Each structure stands twice: as structure tokens, then as C-alpha cells.
Length: 430
Image 1: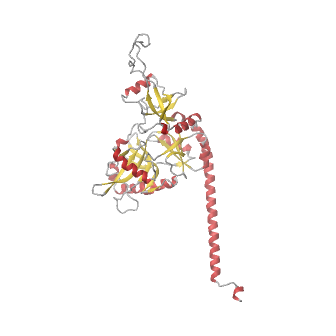
Image 2 (image 1 turned 30 degrees about the vertical axis):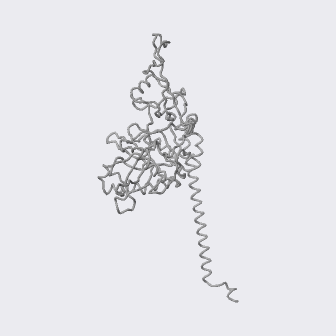
Image 3 (image 1 turned 45 degrees about the vertical axis):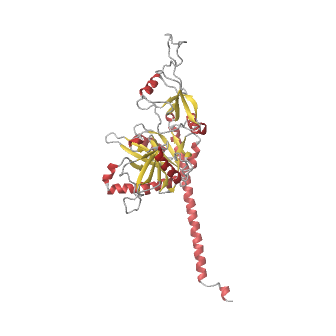
């Protein structure tokens, strides 16, 4: 998650009792019993995915280092019973943030009324801050999927159909509105656009052309199956690849016991010291916990910190116990926290829980079975070959189907024409 931008920069968090109303609405919209966060979660790339990327069509995009959130387009009911357009961002904690801006508007396609708006529409994407060297930064919401559109669940649709619907029915009508009323652009809290998707074999282009020119942070690639449905929770058809150094796990940090103060001048504790006489300036025991579902969070490993890293943590002057912290495994197989630019830990305050143990095992598999950039580049030719073979087979099947329909149509016309000429000669002589 980018440390440069927070959802509170563009929207106001709803009190929990108000958010409950909209959690119920979203659950009903998707026909779900659970009112938890409905977003999909990827699995980590390992060598077993080589065959998967050749088995089916996958789209490729850069893995943005932004804030993952859903954009919910809906309405609120006024006291007099009338309705107003309302837009919310939903974070991974399932907190709702109201975008209190009357200019943030998504008109319906083909409507003559510019004040018409989408309802019960749920988009999936990331909020990022695009930074440029010679012009102002731009906040953008990059859409990469759609769960529902105007009250209709799209969970069962394929990815290409879902993204196509977003472009035609949501993005293009808003862009047309901006062309007609260009002054509205400056009033937007952030820009909304679809994320660029490439065919999975465009790996070389991604590394060579796309990633170096990005105006926002990036920590890898994402492969998503073109023909798969949208899966709430872990989706094995969404595969994230990170450089080995970026393969991280989100743990819950638990602060343990602090070391006792040394009181006898020889670096050893005084036996008469009070049992509460701890050195709260020194680094305590720091434990990393993972999520085991109904069994709660369990200790997984210690967090290794140097003296300088502990000083950086203290410099925050913040509570660190039980926060979610992003960590990586170093060359000595020790778990270290991922650093922000100022050297402090990257806390994932956008997340309520640590990674589930199944996710942890997936990431560990990726670490132990690391796939490098060069491995991906070598694989791209095989992915392209498999894609083209499927493409050719589909064209051939379509041609054969068309020829079969034409033969059936010709036969139908022949039979229909024969019946108009009267009965056969043998019948006529009777």
C-alpha cells in the first residue's frame, strides 16, 4: 500500500452503524450471506504456474503499489423519500468511505438526462497517486474488475465481459460528460479509468517499456484468467508475481517482554530488582503472527530488527502492538520488516487481519521456488505459442460451425423449394 495516499484524503469514513446499512446492500447485491469484504485475492506465482499460463488465456498488468479498494456507486434515501446519487470506497477492512463531492458523478449510457446515475454498481481497483516531474500529481482510481453493474451481479461473467461492460457503461459516459462540461474535470476528487491489460505473453514489453515509465509505485505483475468468473476470496486464477526481494507477507506484530534493566554495573540484572523493572527503551521481543481463521492468530516467527531499525520504529511515537506489518525473508532466512523511504516499517493499516496461513504457505512456496524476471522472459515465447494455437483452433472451430450452419440452411431451402413444385412425378401419375 502506498504511504503517500490514504482513503481519508478523498473520502470520509462512515461510522460503523451507518456502514452496516451498505454492507447489507452489497451482500444482497452479490447474493452473499457473508457481509465481509467481497474482493478477490491473488495467489503467489511459483513454477507450477508455468503450465497454467499456457493452458488458458491470461491477461497481464502491472501490480500497482496503491490502495486496494472497491468503488460502490449507489444512492442514499433522504428524509422526504427522495434519492440522491452516492459513491463510496470500501477498503479491505470493509470500512465504507463516503465521497462527499457533488461533482463526482457517473451518468448512465444513452441517457438524455445528464443527471441520471448508476446504482448498485461495484467496481474493483486501486487508488494511486501518480507523481510527475514537471506537473502536478494526479490521484487516480485504476479499475481492473467489476462485480456488479446497475443491480446485476457480474460474478458469473468472464473477465473480458466484465471489463468491457465497465468501459462502455461507466467510463465512456463519464468521459463524454467531461467533453461537454470540461470544467467538471477540475472538481473531481480523483480520476477513474480502467487499468491497462496486455496479453500474458507481453512480458518483455512490460519490463522494457511499461514498468520503467510508471508514475506510481509498482511491486510486480498480475496475471488474471480471461475466461474465469469473479471469485470472492482467494482466486487461484489471479496470480501475482513479485521479484524475489518483493515477496512479502503481512503479519500481525505482537510486542512481547522488554529486557530487564541492568542495575549492577556489569551488564547483569540485580537479583533484588523489582520484577517490573524493565528497560522500555530497549528492543522487546517482537513476534509475527499469522491468521488461522476460526482458530485466531498464532505465532509464526520472531521479527529480526537491528538497533537502527528499532530506533526508527521508536521514532514513529506510535502504538505498534497488534498492527499489521509487511515483512520479507532475508538471505539469512530471518524475517525483516519492509521499509518505507524514511526507514520506518511498512504498516498495513488498510488491513484488519494478517495473511491467512494458506496465503503464507503460498508465498513461502514462491520464495522457495522463486521465479525470476529472466524465467518469465524465457516463458513468454511458450505462452505466446500456446495462445496462438488456441486462437487458431477457435477460428477453425468457428469456420467449421459456420460451414455446418450454411449446409443446414442450404438443405432447408432445397427441401422447402422442392415442396413448392408439387408432388414427385410418381405421385402425380396416380
